[in-house]
Structure formats: structure tokens, C-alpha cells
Length: 462
Image (tube, rainbow, N blue to C red; front, side):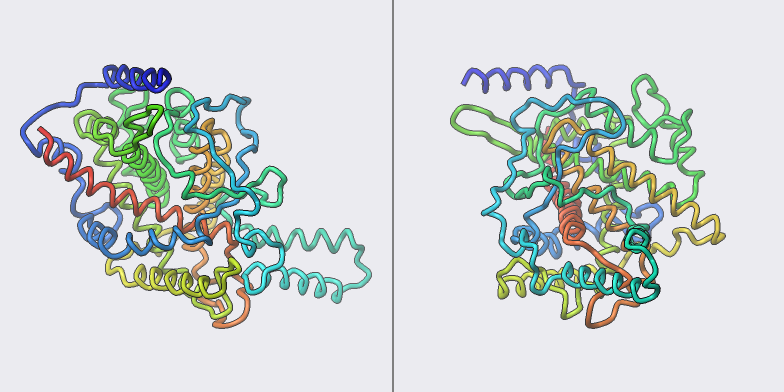
């Protein structure tokens, strides 16, 4: 009880230290957060209202049902990887930062078993065996070491389209986590440690020159003028990269505001929307006009991820592809639901046109694409520096999901060549990528849905 009371006092003190939220007539708070979050989205043909209606009433309910299924709720992750960029072994000591892994016997046999009856992994392993036989048949005089090296080169070529630093899921430190039992929500992880993560992402990986500081950087109160002048002048690819990261950041902040620890006593914990926290991050006045831009970038991220889902439909439509857990009838139901969601995504009337990306000089475009890929891959590595394990879990999952989105968008030619039956040789997605892809989009979809809730709350505030 004393600990709970202490936490509540600390939260109360923190609230006193926050800038005062401006008051006004009913609806004023809503206008400050949302008046600019309407209409056309930059670099797109779509508008906010179309996305709200499509997501909140058509796609979100179905997606939620999909993500509650066994195939999508269990994610294998290594939360013990050391930070590759700085020496920092400190971890969040707050109990809500902890992640509870699954006991082995709780994970469905089909997911954790090494023997798959009708999974994509089985096809991939068969391909590796065929490749090994093919290499041996080409030149039997090759040493075993050379043959193994050639196989490694082949795998490297296969992974050259990867935008993520993926975990080794066979590592002893990799464990299954039930995402439903470890939801993304406010943990108390903030301050200098959290700022260091985002600062490293924005300052070192968003193609930005050193002298151009991102908006609201400490001690740079007016830097946003220079920043947006710079952003407007760069190519669409670099502009999109920044907006994707900003949109992801906004989405995470919405989750933390929507599932905030409101009450912590010995008898119960209560989580719910914290309007003050939301306003600190998105109110136009409190963020000097930056908050609404962040929300617009969330919609940009939504369009990019939705476009990827519409493009990857042929991969999942193949009769041989199954979402294998071991429960054959349930697996068939979930695949049908998955295809329903993908067809719904494809039906969206105002998709983002990714053909404008890397469309110039082929040599320069290839160089820029590789820079784009390496910058994002670096961001996925930064997730191993997050001190809060629950934040690290969701950061790794969402960056892997967005990396999978980029892989899909830049593999259009390979996806177009996928055969209607049999394994896909040119384009592959692992189970890890599939789970991350849909859960990451589920987070963005949830953020858009939560915005409607905050809009309604703010509309009635006085």
C-alpha cells in the first residue's frame, strides 16, 4: 500500500512539474490537438478522414481478432543482446518494465517444434538442401569448406533485401513471449535514458546534417524553422524516412498515453487514457506546433504499412502456405481471416504510390536505396539499447515489422513472380517477419483508433 501511495505521489509531483495545459471553452483542447490533423497528407493522395473511417470501422476489428490468435500472439525475441553502440548495462528497475516469457509447454507445439508439416519454413529448408545438392553437382572437386562458403554467400544474397538486424531465434537467450500478456503501455521508463535512444535515432540515422536539429531538441527552441526548411528541400525518400520514424514515435506515444497507469494500490492496478500526457505530446500550443505534425506522420506511416499489406497478398494466397500451429482447422480459419484482411487492404481506394521512390538515375537510386536500408537496419540495432525490457520488446517488434514493410515494397518484382503453387524461391518471409509485420500494423491501427477516443474526450473538456 505504501509503495502504491508513493508512486501516486510521484506521479502527482510529475504532473505539477509539467507545463500547464491551457484551458478554454469546450472543444478548445480538441482543436489545439486536431485542428491541423485533417484533410490531405503530404506526399500522398489520401486524407485523414478516409483513413479514420476505413480503419476504425472496417479493418481494426478484424485485425484485432487476428492478433489474438495463437499464430500471432507468440513472438520469439532475444531481450539479452548487449547494446552495440555504447557501454550501458543499466536496466529499468520499475516492475512494469519486466517481460514475462512463456513456459515452453504453453507455446503451441506447431510453433516451437522443429518439424513442420505444412509450413513455409519447411519449403525454405528443402530449398537449402536442393541448393547444397546443386552446388555439389556443379563441381565435386570443391572442398566442403568452399561449398559451405558458397551456401553462406547465397544466404547473404537472400538477406541483402533485409532492413532489420534480426535476432538469432536459435540462440539460448531467445524466448517466446505472449504479446497479449505483455501489452505495450506506460511503464515509467522516460527521462535521459529514453531521450538518448530517440536522439540517437533522429540525430544519427535520419539523413540529417549535424547543424539541423530536430524540433524541440533541448536548448534549440527555434530549431524547427531550420529543420522544416531542410526537410522540404530533400528528396522524397529522405523526407519519407523521417516521417516514418516520426510516425512510429507518435504511435508509441499514443499507446503510452492511452494505457497509462492511473491507479496502483495493493488491491488493483487501473490503466486507461491519460489526457494530460497526450496533450504534453501532441497539443499544438505545448509542442509549439509540432504535435499535429507528429499525428500527420502517424497517418503517413499507416498508409505505407497498408500499402505493403496490399502488395504481399500473392505470397499468402498460395494454397501451400499455412499459418501452422498444429491445430489444422483453426489454422485454416485464421488463414481465411488473414486473406480477408489483405483483400480489404487491397480495396482501399487511395493507396500510397511507392513508385515515386528511387525513380531517378538507376545508379544513384540504387545507392540511395542501400543507404535507406542500412540506416533503418541501424535503428533496429538501437532497440537493443533500450533499458526497459517491455519497451525493448515492442520496439524490436515494431521496427522489425516496419523493416518487413520496406522489404515488401522494394520486392515488388519478386512478389510478381511468385508461383501460384509450390514454394516461393525469390521472395520469402519468415514466421518472425510475418508476426512482426501484422503486430506492427496492429499497433499503428490501434493508434489511429485511439485518436478517435482522445478526440471525443478533448471535445468535452473545459
